[in-house]
Length: 382
Image 1: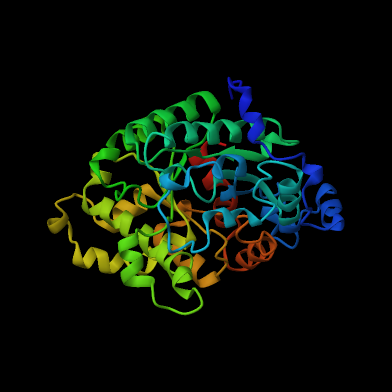
Image 2: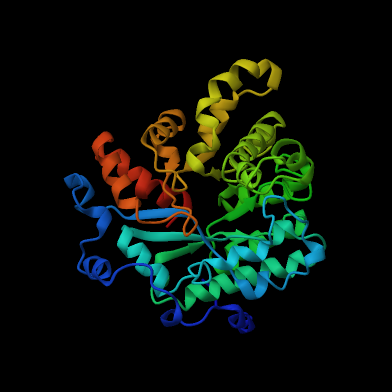
């Protein structure tokens, strides 16, 4: 990584880790330091010698000083966040970007490396030119936090991009990879009414392909038109849940990926690498039907949708620790295409060791090591 040119971003960093609430017991930390990392216990011998190196790809942070300063008129109101996007900052683990509190949680769960990405309101939500310096400040602050971490080798970073400004998004991805050593980028649903199949993003997708880094497609809040039709009118804010993590997020990512396949995006960028979470965002149950309804003669592409996804899409767990869903993702996309993620801290790290041991009972050790470690090492060149 190159030295950060603007040390002024340090003002956005959180207090020293000692002031943050610790979320794991001292006993768990002692066990981890002794080499008895929770995830390594009771695994098959091939996974303990050498110990599996668990890498998780969808792990979030926030920078309240930056995000709270966004002018409210630049961020559209969202039914999915009925109170205020500022309420996203309630969890004190989020501002701990790469500090000791986060490392303690990783140690207790047997996680060797987290790939960090911004959570909450971001440049993708922001209208106008404000998004461009905002994204740069996020990326510079993230870089500096990892540099200052007690264990910087435990972290990698996804770039945050001003998605409503596609040319600037491509330039920022290039800067983050070349100058900051980031391993890819994360996007968040539609931006300004456009998905990645829109040709306005060809420059960004071409840049990702040229740099040979993946774009992780994370869900985003649905636009107001869909919120009104699909999700309003339910009691106790159940509509807000349904619109986001209850179903809407996952449907939206699947729609975006299917649009990209139908629009020929993957044909224009045959070496583009995409990642999505949540066990494949509903797609494992749909690929056979998609190929039936969109045969290659209808698509006018050489590859079917299923073949395209198996060749260019990777999926992660995102903390959805369900064995049938995990096996369905592995069987659908292939064991070389599935990786681990927790969705920390929105989902807890504590179930991670148990799920690793459950998969240890139903997968060959070499295959489980791919999912937990080597697939991510290969994709991200860790």
